[in-house]
Image: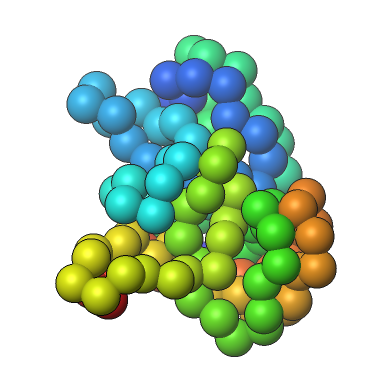
Length: 120
């Protein structure tokens, strides 16, 4: 697992998908098209606090709804993971693959983290 520490640009909860801002600080990724770079660990961060980000390997994510095990995931509202459903020709930023199923918003599941762009 590759984990690095950054400064939080805004409040970010535990197990949320993160992105960089222009200054290299992290905040929650909130859309499938955001350039997601990893997920936060079990420690939330307030603005200006240090925030650990898992860039690659096994981690946990907070689900934004139902997700099937083995399905690719992207950022949704408030940095929560959602199952990818790209429109034809659109590019999304995968954060990884769910290793467990989620049945509801707020479920915390294991995921293999590997940020990559994907064209539908």
